[in-house]
Length: 333
Image (tube, rainbow, N blue to C red; front, side, top):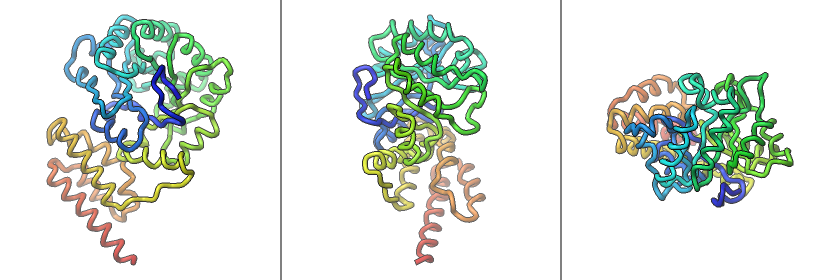
């Protein structure tokens, strides 16, 4: 699969853009575990052209994570074009336009998935951004605004005509937010449309290697994007890539192997921010990780882990869990 001239290989697996998740350290970690392409947190075009410091920081990319897409969102042509030019200057490999974020503070103001209620403006923004830059432009969107307006099959053609290099579709409507089950059937219909020439990437509920392969096989997508399934589990890319290549599950590592990865995430977060903010930032990963699932009477330990305010306390709790897991495994022998 190619995005512009960027060759991502056969059946690429990509890290989805996620606010407060896909910072540079997490992107590099997912790349290390096999992600074929990574995306930044989404960047406000208005904040970018006003040179807001925290927004500008999101443009920081490294050679270790390439190819990397910088994702931008906004609701007017001028700011989106100017933001795209800034992203090109920041050495993005791809500029991705966010027409899919469903949260109220973005979609409710007409940006992100809110643009699904103003298709003419969506297409004007897309055409203008494509014309303004010399690097590939991609779009990420949803099936439609709600159940009665699933317009993605027609919209895909319209976006292609605007000159985008790749289209990613999340298998939910804006009204669904992140509830229910992602519906990939319309993503498959896009691929069945003989007028479609650009690569189509599917996204939504990819939480296992089996499901990833099923989506490739059943819906014929060119690539698969993993979002929430990677939170607290960056090694999912390693598992998926192995399964796609061999048809076999990758043998599990020891509990400590996975725990050390989470510890590394914590330390990287602290290094990038500071101890207090770094721990706060990483709590989403600790809450979501499947590593601690199945441990008996874990609730109180989980609460303590998510309340820890120093790395010493947090690592102490995590090491206690590891000792407990080791003791349980010894007892079962």
